[in-house]
Each structure stands twice: as structure tokens, then as C-alpha cells.
Amino acid sequence: MARQGVLLLLALGWLAWTQVQAGEAPAGESGPVRVTIVEEAAPTKAVSPAEEQLLKKLQSPLSVQFGGTPLKDALRYFEEKGKVNVILNTSASGVDPLFPITLKLDNVTLASAIAWTARLAGLVYIARDEAAFVTAPTDLGPEWAAEVRAREQANDRAAAKTWVRKLHAKLDEPTAFSFANTPLAEVLNYLSSRHQVNFVLDPAFVRPDNTITLEVSDISLKSALGWLLRMKRLDYTLVDEAIFVSSPERLETLQISRSASSLDPRLGTMLDVELSEATVQRALAALAEATGVNITLGAEQAPSVRVSLSLNHITLDQAIKKLAGSTGLPFAVSVGKEGVVVWFGPKKPTPLPREAPKPPAEEPKAPPETGQPNKEAKPGARLPHGDGLEVTGQAGLMLSPPAAA
Image (cartoon, rainbow, N blue to C red; front, side):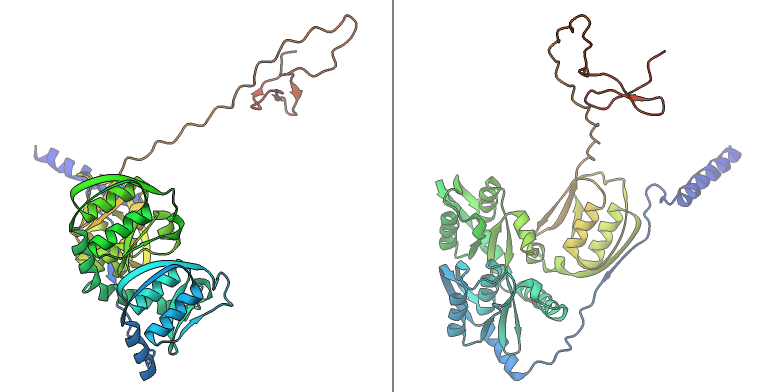
């Protein structure tokens, strides 16, 4: 018996060694995983007293209500109310001074109001050289683009302690309503007035025919909003003191991907991630350990695939999506106050190749008159094709051997 036990241990060791040599981690184990938080560099640009004054003014509160207001007039309003210089780069491609702005915001900072106005016009703004400069994203150089990203990250960190908490409290409030063929814009206006929440509807979906028919009672505003948007295949995100409603595709196009970090600022943590033949469970656990975010799988059994990734300077929510996407499996990521849940579906079967459609049957043709050869090529007549193979004249280019002599 002892000899049999030794032989069994040797066999198991040999099997594990062959798996490692083949580049696979032994079953139940994971390859190397390294997750490092990227420390933010201290700002190197000195801020002058005039710029400090500008940043202070940008934090002053105000309310706006624009209904098709030209972009240039909306920016002029901010100049007058905030006592700041707002410069629109009309020479940049895609900048239209007459672009109509429809926006209603109550008690937000001047910075958020300018950011929303620029965003709806497909633009960005940067506070620099004693002015708020509004331009096209493609017009920003690397240095200025980095400043915009730094500002957004700083806003996210500050938001976690201020308006994000207030918005979540509003979303937990009970609500009730009954709408019948009501335009979505009117529905959001009603909810905004009832709950004192700022909603911004993507102009692409402000249409009279985009209507809602729904009746709910004794339900949280968050759940009600989820149901009415699900009916229209839309989504929302929290950004710049408002709830922005659009399609998932438009949110990606407009580069508004801060919904996760709005729910939990730790999801915006910048990371460097190195995975080598790692199990999905181990990779998600490493992300959770590094950031303190609760990350779980939505099913009891984890995917058996291994992942190898090298990601630099990426946010936690983006890293989770990259990791899930690298498995090749259908997946969904759910973000809530309790943490992140990652769901995986079964691998889709590879579709079989389609057969070439058969040609329609043709009417039989009358035989040629006696002594008159039929010069018309018949369907399916074999044509010489070189090296002993012939290709039929029918659809599908089927190969057949030459006829026997």
C-alpha cells in the first residue's frame, strides 16, 4: 500500500509538471497576478492668485434654464452671472456658436453648468490662463487633455463627499406616478420637480414620439427610473451634479464613463494590472484586495478560462470590464452600493457554415430541331478547369471529378 501511495504522488506531480510546461496553471491554482495603485503625481503647474480667484468663482452656485438657447448666448450668460471670462474656440472643427442648448439645472456650481453646456454641444472646457476655454476635444493638446482628465478625477473625489451622497439619498426616496403616452422629457421634468433632482436628457432623445406609458406606486425613484428607461433601452449616469439619460452607446461616444465612480469613488482608482494565466476568481480577488471594493461573481461556478492582461493607468471599473471581456464569454457588470457583481454567460456555440442556396428549378426546354445543334450552354454543363477537376456551371461552384472516358 505504501508503494502504491508513493506511485500515486509521483504521478500527480508529473501531471502538474506537464501542465506547467504546457503554459497552464494546475487546476485550482492561478498564474501570477499583480495589481498596483497608481499614485497621483503632485501638480507641477503653479497657480497664480488670478487663477485661484477663477477656480473659486467656478465653484459659485447658480441655476440655469435654457430652451434652445444658442451656445454663444449660453456662455455669455455664464460670463455675466459668474463674472468670469468664457472663451469659445470658434476656429476649432465641430464648434457651432449657434448650437441650440436645452438645459435646466438648479443650484449647481458654475463649473458644472459650463461643463454640461459644453458637453451637450460635443465640446469640453478647461480652466486655464484666467478663463474658461470651451473647445473641441480633438483641439486639446496632450498637456491640456491631461489637465481635463485631472479636473474630472478631482471632481469625482470631491463629489463622493458632497452631491453624490445627496443624489443617492434622492434616488432612495419613494415615488409614484402614472403616465400614458407622455414624452420622456416631460416625465423627467416631473420627476425633477417632485424630487428636486437635476435630470439632463440627451438631445438625441428629445422627441415628441419618444413617449412613456407606465404606472407605479410605493417604489423607490431609483427603481422607477430603471423601469422607465429599460422600456426605452436607455441608461443613466451620475455626473456633474445631475442624472444624465441617454443610450449606453451614446454614453460611450460622449466619453461619459464615470457612472461607476459616481456610485463608489474607489471604482475610479487608477491601477496598473499584470495577469499571466490567472483564474478569473483570483484576478477579481486581487482587484478587490488592492482597492477595498467588494467584487463578487454572480454565479457559484467561476469561468474555467485563464486570462493574461497587461493594463496600465486604467480605472478599476474599466479593468473589471477588460478582464471580463478577455474571457471571450458574454458578461454583464452590475454596480451598486454593496459593490460590484460580475455575471458570465455560457460560451456561444460556433455557428455552422451556411450551405450555398440551391438554384431555382428551370423550365425544361424543347429539344432542338433535327439536324440543328443546340448551341446554348445548358445549366450544369461542365467546363474544363485545368488539372483534371471540373467546375459545374451551377451556383455554388461545386467541384467534381472528370467524367469517365
